[in-house]
Length: 199
Image (cartoon, rainbow, N blue to C red; front, top):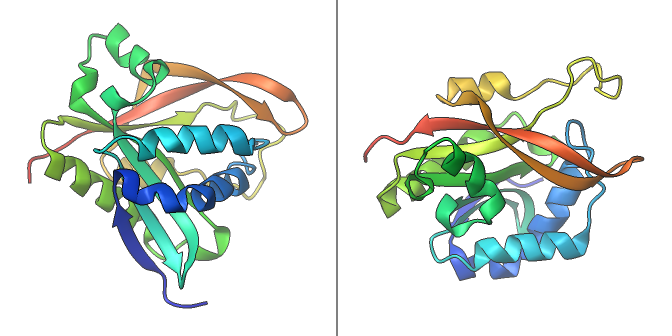
């Protein structure tokens, strides 16, 4: 295992990494709380939308040439209407929001500060673009008493709060995905937001 390095690429420059990021998403999101039974075709299409936005960003963690973690971001106005709809419904300007798609990192590389690097890189990118008042992401809502929740699971809520993000109850979207052992299911995801300070 070499020292992990962080690489930031934007838009079409990320195209060569799409298969790697898709594989990471399918691996990491199989875990609680997503329990995602991955679909390679969906993954490729989903990530291609990010690569197709000239204002998007991919923050990659690499061990040598191997992609071991990735985080994405895109102006909410460039994302699918389903992601914009909850903001519009609450009178928020989607054009002022830079949306973070995901942060996925293989277990062996956790606890090294890479999660902070993922947020730092995306926040800096949004700030450099200009015109954004907020950064935001969505997290799946699960029943705390769900018997599938591993006893050793430690959520990311304290990490997100420590970075200044606040969960916005009611600012929620629904998304369907194939859940391990349960087939296609509809899932609520609630947004967390933070004001984006000027450079």
